Length: 378
Image (cartoon, rainbow, N blue to C red; front, side):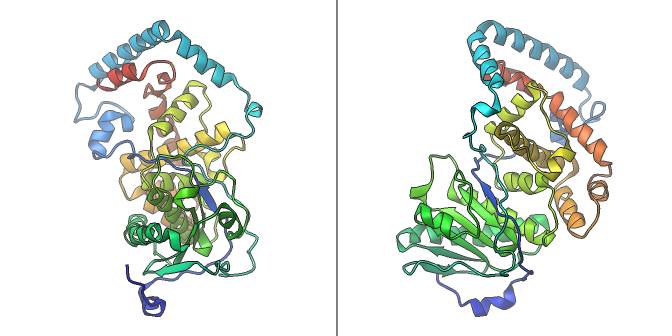
């Protein structure tokens, strides 16, 4: 990609004020969100609440068969999977204190205070041998040996960032600086504050800064570097849209996971364990912050992704942009949720949790995947 003169791009961008914020860090997986077949089919597959859909007159019969199949699968799992059940129960009983080093799992982010709060748009000094690729939306800073990866990231951001901005109905804002760390000490030292040791990438939204590890530094993961970049770009867009206001944590993390296509089998496994242990968090609990306990925090991230996916499937693709817009303009959470869904927050919360509870997902830790596949086919 040819380098562009930043001066020629200034009039093409929509700059927003940049100030202090908290970085978001993540180690995400990659897969499609749960239902992409349109609201009507999603509703028939369990995303809507209330009575039988007028498009699905046989739902009562199917629900009865579904319940019988769940019971049969549970009995089969108990008979044939006793050893697996024992192991699952043991793992569930482990105290969080017994695994203090357990890192937040896939798709999880953490906020770290910004020590550059009074230094505006200052950027870190780059190592002498680093290079920069300039483009319309991002500058990618890299070591010469990582040029191929840097070109790939620049080209990827050129399409994904405006696409996410369009889906969220927010401005792209000013340039985003992406730092591709060639060494571990660079990944730490270039950032405004120390990132968590498990971080695969970090975003400082109001500063328009993203830090990624070069491929040789990354742990074994199924995620592509493009996926991690997508996750962080969404953080930047939402953070800029809110201009320093508090963003509900479930909204920031849930949208990042869903838009980056990170709703995975690991997400459903985490949800299943939470349902089985009756540990599901309420929407209000997910808004202000996530638990410090890594197991509960992992559940909070999974619930956030599921909530965002469900809102899109249930109320349409404009539900999330409406919530983002109204909250960023100063509306209260209740007013923003009613504008997006026509329902009160407690009603939406009950509908979402009821759908999860009635899904049969809680059986997943108890029975084999084969049995669950048979149930899901009904």
